Image (cartoon, rainbow, N blue to C red; front, side, top):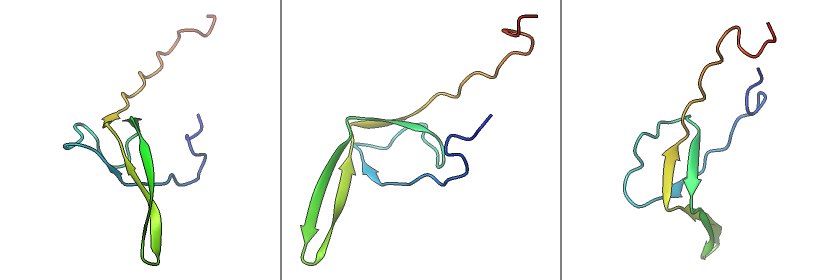
Length: 72
């Protein structure tokens, strides 16, 4: 089984959401609902800010069961 990023590091972005996301831990896969991006500029600084309606954890996939689906 290969890793989702195949040895590459994933990017981390800060996303503002109303309230505190429940069940989200650092490094876990998440689902972002209603993501919006906004370009901003202030003097000689500029960037992109993100906000979303919600961030929820992605449920872990069930572990494969030995002996099933092997044609045996």
